[in-house]
Each structure stands twice: as C-alpha cells, then as structure tokens.
Length: 407
Image (cartoon, rainbow, N blue to C red; front, side, top):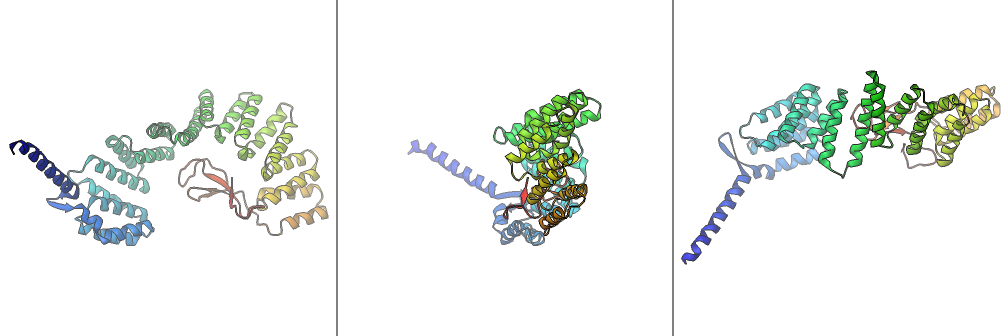
C-alpha cells in the first residue's frame, strides 16, 4: 500500500492543478472581485449583440453588449468590442474613452495590453490624430513585434503622410513575417513604394537614384505600370529615346490592358527616331490580339486622322464605339473627324444609329475594394489606400450582358 502513496499523491496533485487551471481560465480577479468569464459568453445579450454586429446593426449591438458587460462585470473583451463599435459609428471620442479606461486596468496581460493599444491606435487614426496613432501602433509592436494589424496600419499611416521610406521598411517587416505564401502580393506593394521613392528622388534632383528606384520597382513586379512610365520618361529626358521605347514596349508586353497609358509617349518617341510607322503597327497588333481593345482603335484612329486619312480613322472609331459606346473621349474624336469630312450625311447617319441609346460619360474608374470613383486611373485609392485596385467602369458593356467592369 505504501508503494502506491507517491503515485496517489501525484494524481491528486495533478487533479488539483487541472481544477485550478480551469478555474483560472474561467474566473478573473478584477477590482477585488472574481469575474466569471464564461458567464459573459453564455449571456443571451452577448450572443444577440454578436448577431447584430455580424448584421451591421451597430446601435442594437451596442445596447445588447452593454447589457452583457454589466452582467459579466465589465469583461475586457466586451468593452473592447464596444469601443470598436463606437468608432465604427463615428463616435471616436467615446471609443477613445472606452479603450483608455481599459488601459488603466491593473494586471493586464502583455497581449491584452497590446490588443487594447491596437484598438486605441485605430481610434486615433479614425479621428485624424496621426501622431498619437503612430505612437500607439509603435507601442503595440514593442509588446508584440510581429503584430500584422499594427504593421499594416503603421504602413498606411506612413503612406498617407508620404513617408515612403518608413512605409517601405514596414512592408518589408510584414513580408518577412508572412514568409513565402503571400510573397507576390508584398512584392507588388513594395514595387509601388519603390516607384514613389523614385518620384521623391526626382523632386530632390537626384535622377540617378530615381533611375535605380524605378528599375528596382520593375524588378520586384514586372507589371508595375507607373514604374515603366516613369523609367521611360527619365530615359527620354537623359536623351536615350531608344531605351525609353524599349521600356514602354516592355510595359505593353507585360500589361497590354495598360498599353494606352504609353500610346502618346510612344507615338512621339517613334517620330523622334524617324520610325513613325511603328506606332500604327503597334496599334494593329494590339487590336489583333484583343478584339475588344477600343483604346488601341481610338489611338490608331487619331493617328490616321492626324496624318490625312480621316475616313479610315472614322471606321476605326466606329468599331471602337461598338465596344464602348459611352466613352466621351470616343465621341469627341468622332465629332472632330466628322468635321474634317464636312459632316457627310451618310457618315453622320451611321454615327447617330450607333449612339441612339448611348449615354456619354468621362472615362470613369472605380476601386474594387471600396467602390471609390475617379475620372482618372489612380495607383493608390485615396479612400481605402489600397494599391492597384482601380479598373475602368462601363455603364453598359459591349457584346457582353453579364460583365459590368472591365480592366
């Protein structure tokens, strides 16, 4: 019997340890009294509040979660959610107050402290208190160095302040944290940041550094359109039109849907080196590769109209109109070409027939992430601050009743 006493004692100690651990997991000492954490999660008010949160009903969610917090003795996680809901509602001051009060609680664990600071940083960011938001996110990273939410928000703040170098370093930390899986996504964003650093170098009068940055952007992401455009512009300024042409042609090979951004540049550069015939050839190649490429038809039509062939130009413009009947820039080109042909009755009649149901509009672009609209193609959305999310918007797609957006 005595031989079993040590084993029995060990089992009893193990059971006591498990019981204490379960109690510690369930109960928490707060302001001199024990709080039952499970009680908060089992409250019908808590469950109902989460349902309202999921449904985007902020006011009833706040009411139910407030009741749940009262029952549970102001559980930290519920107060954290309440502060976030106040922020989403636009009551930033109330959100800051909620989260600051949570920071005053004694015995906060390290990660709890970091989570509260993260929410407070989001409050400051929403309220426009940039310096305080930067401090909060920086402190989160001191407590939790690889916190992805603090890193991504810190990067966005740096981008909003045009602190491109700091944004670049922060994105590198995010990339190192995430490993290989999202490597392409990080490379794309780093390429845009390299491009911005190149533009910053140009403003400082350092074209050599700008050249290095634009080349680095292309190396990171072979489809980075603004880097190709800026690199070609810089090469042309340095008196090397051949290199500029090669750069812009590489852009078209990598991203033919963005080719139109280089059309004007290439047309002038080809003429500069005495190879004007290459531009219409390029446009015809793009049209052959993509029958719906209305911009290549527009560019070729304008080119032919400017070089004494308005009738062929008008045919191309009419073909482009079939693909995108609402683009104002197309109609302006057609009006100009019809005027060159003295408004020939048959051609005017054909134009009227093609545009009978068209609504003219400026070339519009829309952010796929937040639906922000812009009349120009932007590389970073000014509303949600995401990179490369704009596509061309169509009022009514041509020859395709299902698609609503085309890039």
